[in-house]
Length: 505
Ligand code: NAP
Image (cartoon, rainbow, N blue to C red; front, side, top):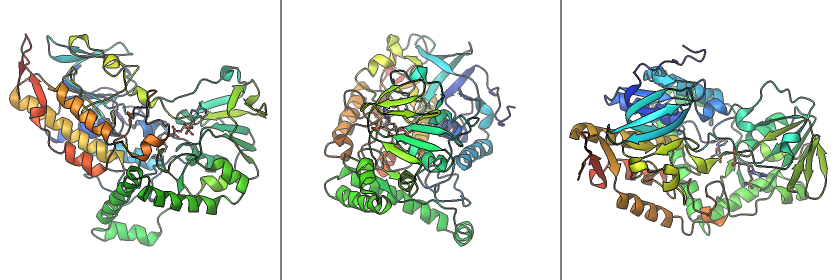
């Protein structure tokens, strides 16, 4: 066993029924769902030394989920002892460890194993999976659960490599680097930055924040639950369930605001603006920090601590674009040089890359990179024609701007399990979505973005052509409805025996 308590050897052999790539919430959810339904020949390959995915990597100060824990948890593994509304990273990571252990899927995880390529072997009706460690796996089904937020993005800035001080990305926080008394820069002001800036601002000598876009904020103090509320949640039947239902509806109301930017969105934006005005007293600072796009177009940020941190004497908000980085600091377009000891990149993730640079080759040599050349798309975010018995979790168009990704992941795990049950029940080799089904569902999905706030600015939800590839355009309940029951008529089944023949559903 590793120090983190995760087995380094999968219990199954290198030929498995189902191979899962990624041991974050998606991969663990899939493994639990399959195991619970009698599909036990499963292995999970994880590149990190521990399970956890984003909750393993993102350990920056103040890291927490901005979705309340009563919803950011699986329906079958509810807790009554969350320490606060939105749990800190360690608590969420411990939760994932705990449910993986309880459902005995932690021992299926093979850590420090990075998948480099997956290719469909038509003759054998199996996926052949290669790892950077030189191993080869074969599997009847492949679940890619690498998510959208696992590859840190560091924008190219002239001279960045010449910087003589220390620098790191927020998702690779260098805990050995003492920031006390240092002149520190943060590049980026997204969801990660606004969580750690209030934590480090009181510690550093000077904090220079380079902002490209302002954000819309909503209040959230996220203090520890008072003892009385904790006791009520713990002891009174129904309180925890009620909170989950309430949070579900509240987050659906955020989607409502995003879907209707001229009406509900305007009212929600006014609420945000009033909160922001109350937090930012200095008119110049307020003008600098103010967003210039429609409320809800980018992620709405919940923090009562970030904007006040900007008013500290040792903090400067810079809105001049960065021109270059020198050995001693950052020079902006207006020629001001900011001398620095440390640069923290809070510039997000390569979200459009999904599982790439992994190479995925489907039937007849079809490269996923080519299939997605105009932008990623998949039926319900999971299935693509030409890639039999391959499923993506937290795939294209399944990100949520307000809801809980765990609600989506739980639904996806159940849907994939149904797909594999169909394969078993029919004695076929693989299941593959019909091309016309995937094309029609993609057209319908993209059409639903019309008139929404998501189309009113540039964001990481879109690719270079402006197509929204990250987000689901509707409500969580709609995704749950559409994934509840797999319709076998939307798929064809590939016979296991050689030569592969296609049978209609
Ligand atoms: P992000 O939201 O993508 O923010 C990246 C920041 O870097 C933005 O302010 C962006 O500005 C800026 N930036 C990017 N390229 C830049 C460049 N070349 N020059 C200057 N600034 C640049 O990344 P993140 O904060 O890591 O969050 C990513 C996602 O992770 C979130 O949207 C959310 O889904 C998730 N997350 C969730 C939580 C949670 O509590 N649930 C916490 C953290 C993260 P622009 O806005 O102008 O692009």
